[in-house]
Amino acid sequence: MKLGAIEAGGTKFVCGIADENGSVLERVSFSTETPEITLQKVYDFFKDKGVEAIGVGSFGPIDPNPNSETYGYITKTPKKYWSDFNLIGELQKNLNVPLAFDTDVNGAALGEATWGAAKGLKNCLYLTVGTGIGGGALVSGKLVHGMLHPEMGHIIVKRHPEDIYEGKCPFHKDCFEGLASGPAIEERWGTKAYELPVDHKAWELEAYYIAQALVNYILIVSPEKIVLGGGVMKQLQLFPLIRKNIKEILNNYVQTKEILENIDEYIVSPKLGDNAGLLGGIALALKI
Ligand code: ADP
Ligand code: ZN
Image 1: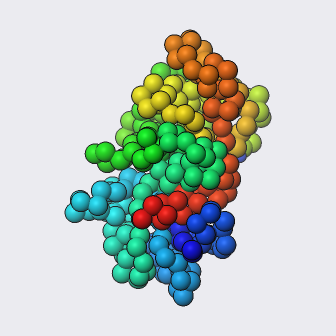
Image 2: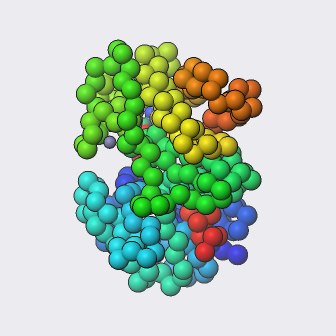
């Protein structure tokens, strides 16, 4: 079976084809421009490819509710040209196959649970820490939507006592994303995040914020595994710092093996690497 995936990102789009076992057969990527230019490249890629369904994982906020009038839309986004854009409606006009639609992070959570770091688990959480921060959650085998979809990046965290940076979120200033996204790190320290040395204070603050957020997610949805992706998480020194902070904050309150004994296998990197988003789309397509 040939399935298609579209990873619709604010910076780049990735299109690909894989089989039902998650083997990627082909992929392309191009930068996100206006919808007209970008979607034409999507149509060109899928033309005559013979895929049976396509899963679309998109940057948000989106409307993933099939019963809503604005189902398939990218809703209010600061991203120029894409606010209130009927993504699925436009794609459906040109791609004559069933389309699945969800947030990029819900897709990634499902992809990791199907073939990756959370393989076989029915409860897992995927968080990306990159240009923005967003999370997807699989709970009892189902992706969480509810009223809209989770917006895990915009939760409130306690400020680090030494942090005087005002925060970068255009809505809340110092929410989790406002304090811990890649651009927040870069504005706070006045340098590219990847150029900061591994022992820089930046990573202590970063781990402090990420750990607080993860503690909240652990206490609310009780995932069996947490997968941390996105550009900032390429700083692997963050992982032990985050795990240590989580243990300190929880203070033996959650008495599970995952946290008390195996936290190294509980908070992990994505296993699908650069194909995480793409295989997320394929996993969404498989569910149709
Ligand atoms: P996006 O969120 O746009 O899909 P990424 O997840 O790659 O893309 O996030 C990009 C952001 O992550 C950049 O703005 C930068 O701040 C940060 N970043 C990217 N690579 C690294 C790195 N190696 N180390 C630390 N931060 C990084
Ligand atoms: Zn915010």
